[in-house]
Amino acid sequence: MAGDPLISLRRLCLALPETSERLSHGEPAWFVRGKKTFVMYADRHHDDKVAFWCPAPAGAQEELVGAEPERFFRPPYVGHRGWLGVRLDVDVDWAEIERIVIDAYCLVAPKSLIEQVPGRT
Image 1 (cartoon, one colour):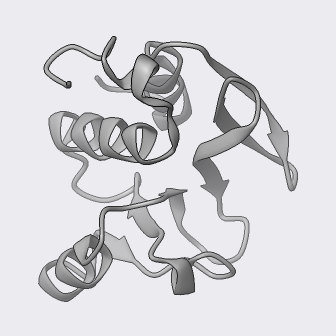
Image 2: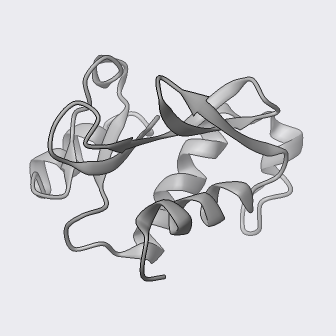
Image 3: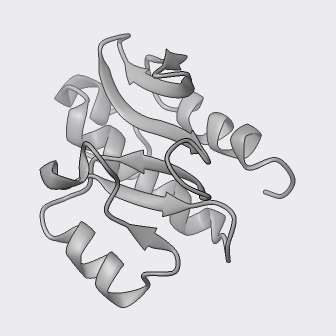
């Protein structure tokens, strides 16, 4: 995926079962069944980064930020809950982004929807 990172991110998020998009805090965000947020876009919203924020599995935030602080960060407001910030303006690996988005989705989606995600049970 190349071009506008918002378009690519939107495509990944809306491909998952029963997802929707709406503005949250002035930026696009994606929800499972219209209720639980699994990705929030951040276009220089709090800093100079084009990125997204999402819940991450336990320990993933620390591991990724520690290993690649130029690509990953602890986002404001939700970072203390383990959410991960992922930059979309530097060295973007869309296959990795897809895995991160799917992991975030699976952290908030009900089991019946997770079972519909290819490769997940």
